[in-house]
Length: 104
Image 1 (cartoon, helix red, strand yellow):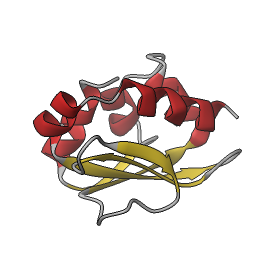
Image 2: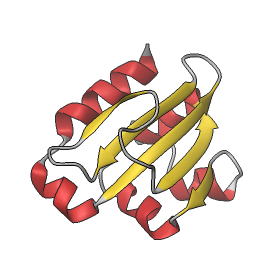
Image 3: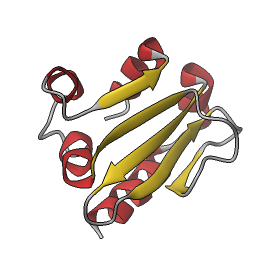
Image 4: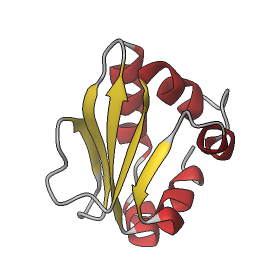
């Protein structure tokens, strides 16, 4: 699925340096095809990404459609545009959420 493929690419792009620089855990609540709960852990050594709840408590929870998620991570939808247009809702640490944009 496009969502699973996106998370596979994210997992492959992780580095210890990026984890050290970010220090955050992101949970995604995706609606639509291949929706559900997914995560990106940029706090635990080495980092990880995948389906389900993160291994540690999330610092940021983002809710959006799976289609918009894929668009966002492939550069077709800017996170700030998604947020301002109501396609993306962010709970908790907004500053950390902005740090994730650097990874895109």
